[in-house]
Image (cartoon, rainbow, N blue to C red; front, side, top):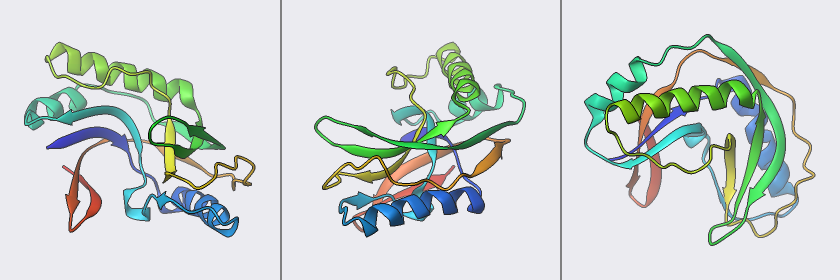
Length: 163
């Protein structure tokens, strides 16, 4: 199974993300927009593994106080697969949480992607353009829990499911 540890969003927070996506579409941007049910923020990408019980134990061992995040400005990753994303305010606490999760995974010998952690919400992959001046509605939410998710293709569509 292809696994990652993530934050899921409240409906109110998700509405702001969907508004940003709509603003992009209104500007004529085309691409592979993230479907509403797949919106999330990845804390740690693990990839293919069958060590679900060990991952659950690692995640359960990481305690944190609830903290607030807010929507941020748009940005983009370039490279083979361009990605247009929404940034997050409240990064420091999220970075601390991601580091603690990585440490818990390390202690159990669980492999994961060691790339730098840049908190973001993927809005669209392979956009025809990358305008960064879309107005983003301010929204915030309190992070109280994290989830383990699996990623799979079902009938040609990418589906993320909480484990």
